[in-house]
Image 1 (cartoon, helix red, strand yellow):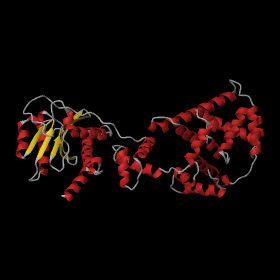
Image 2: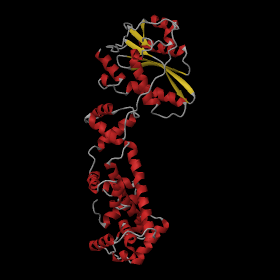
Image 3: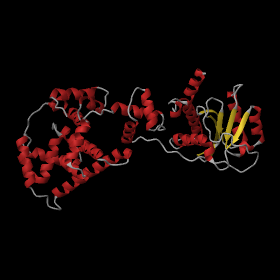
Image 4: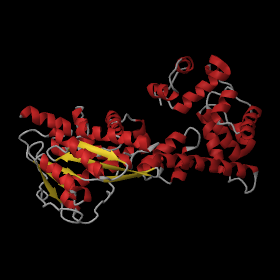
Length: 453
């Protein structure tokens, strides 16, 4: 940390007191630890500008004991105590406490300002035997040790909750934050890492993070897409922003930030056996389509929330993966697919020859459904019985929908869910990029196809 003159301290403190900036923001800009800046603010609030004027006072033993007694009786931190007693450095108070616990009143008498006196106290501390078990000094030392361990493990838990594991870097980060309150040597013992390891990471923690701007962009993209993007899509989205990094680098940064894409879930099955006519499997797992309105796929999935159910029936165009029509109802009746088809056929152009593929669900076996397809020149195709892979693209969409919406967000009501479902389908069509569409969204790809035609 840089050294600050009295004038510097006053200006920095007044910037916080008279302005609207946070301590963290100011501390980051002037490169001072936030706890230290907070201590300066406390000093100013208690004693004004005079608190920063060095008096070079040699504090008496009685004064030191009064300060330590005040801390013990009130539980006040070293920073607050320094502000109350107009002591320039909270670290000085911690040194008094440590000297008193190990050497008693005699150690306080030897302590004078300047490096030579500190060496004497250090030598004295080394010669002193540990406090007698059961004594006041031993109880104080044990209390301080427990307080330090409690503070350390609380911070470790907070740091590691996002990454899922405790690394030496995390331990060093915690020690770095607590070193202004506790002795580094003792903290290193609690962390169970070599002191050299801590100082190795301390140098890097003080260095500017070269990936800081990249991390900001990653986090913005991740939250914009509500956690639905993994590192590959985020890498491609960054390239749109003219930020180029290897996908492995983005993956590593996301892991360090605790960001990951959600897993997929299973879909609802609605097969009830043969209740009508079964159509042949015309699609035969050939999911490639060169033109719009060439191959469509459909299916029904179920959502169960707040003791209610909703059924979604969409139609997906295999050319660009776009949801061209869908219907949501609270019961899986025929109108669920009938109304969906009425909406989908509005996309048909005079020369279109369409194959519409589904599973063998009872809706698709009904004669009025099949007659409606024939009326619009649509050829019907069905998966083989019990073979979900024959309609894999639709299965994939439902998996994405549930993992990126249903299992990722919390909803206040079924009506709230329905609004979010409508918003997600719009997002899926207009914003969610796909690798096989040359990193474009379905609508962007369709627009390019139509322009090329």
